[in-house]
Amino acid sequence: MKRIGVIGGGQLAWMMASAAQELGIELVIQTPHDTDVAVSLATEIVLADVDDVAATAILATKCDAITFENEFVDLEGLDKLAIAQNVSFLPPLTALAPLLDKYTQRCYLRDLGLPVPQFAVLEQPELPPGFEFPVVIKARRNGYDGQGTFIVKDASVLAALYHRYPDTPFLIEEFVKFDRELAVIAARGVNGEVITYPILETQQEDQVCRRVFTLDDLPTEIVATCNSIASKLLTSLGAVGVFGIELFLTADGKVSVNEIAPRTHNSGHLTIEACATSQFSQLIRAVAGLPFGSTALTCGGAVMVNLLGYEDTHSDYPDKRQQLAAIPNAHVHWYAKESRIGRKLGHVTIVVGRDDEHQDYLSQAQSLARQVETIWYP
Ligand code: ADP
Image (cartoon, rainbow, N blue to C red; front, side, top):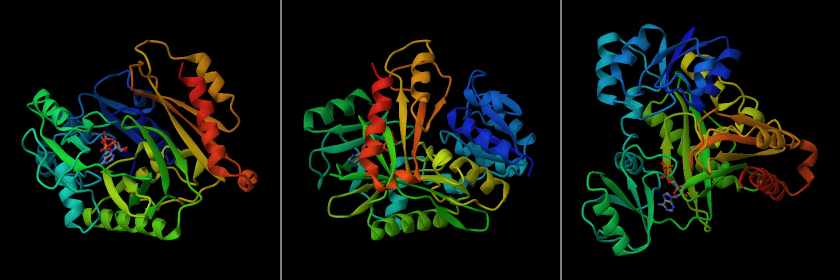
């Protein structure tokens, strides 16, 4: 395979493009703005919104298969296109279908026998039977980075939310009193092989991912549970590509699935520097039918910190980026986006050497994360 089409041209497509170049594969990208970061690395661009099916029909004529950096697509339209033009979407559209709506995704996971928090459709401005406050209310579609997710502590807030968004279908969930949030990045090839990366810990603030750590203290049975969830899920979906699976871990060792994203994932960014093969390279390999590379860590551990916008500005923060890059073993990835509050503008990964393994890895990684955040946030 020579050319892969990508729907979406943001930072994920940009990191895919670097990986594709190393494998000698060209990317053609469908994205709405010629300033989007992946444009500079693409062989060709189709300038259109990600849900513009007519544009995807053009994209299909320029490549051998199409993958996604963004799942907010018009699935029905793509289904028709797949049949009419015999387009190969990888992951297949049937693997995306149950996942794009958070309610149908939850039903899919439950029906597969995977552990999920208690959930229901929110049909009226009050707590359904069997739920207790606090609860989590989520827009069923198109939520990301905590947009559309609300932790609700009482009836008045629940009613206000329901009335504020009269046209938004919501899911209601029990609030999981988790001890840690984990993530598994997993990939499945056309031959059905499933590979997983070392389990990661993610830390969210206000429902947005702030930091990701590799782990060295996770009990083996929890690692096995996470990997078996990933394997069961990707196999059942008939997935081809890379999927990010977010999990809750409670203090008594129970794992449940929060969410699955049918694409490369923010929690896997540190695989670029910390693992033998990045999640982006594995995606390109899966789509191109190439063998997977090793997912093993090549360092003692690593931490990734998201650089979130804290103001609206055109500045691209050259001084701060220089200071961040001066941290030993730090790798700064800058997405060249205009800064808006809460927007992911870049990330920094810091690898911890094998020589440092005798130290307490997690406290070392946490202090590195603090160092990054002290430089970045005013
Ligand atoms: P998004 O799709 O916008 O990333 P998520 O559903 O992943 O939204 O939720 C974002 C974060 O909100 C989670 O990482 C977690 O910290 C918190 N959260 C979501 N669902 C629950 C829940 N049921 N219980 C407790 N916290 C939750």
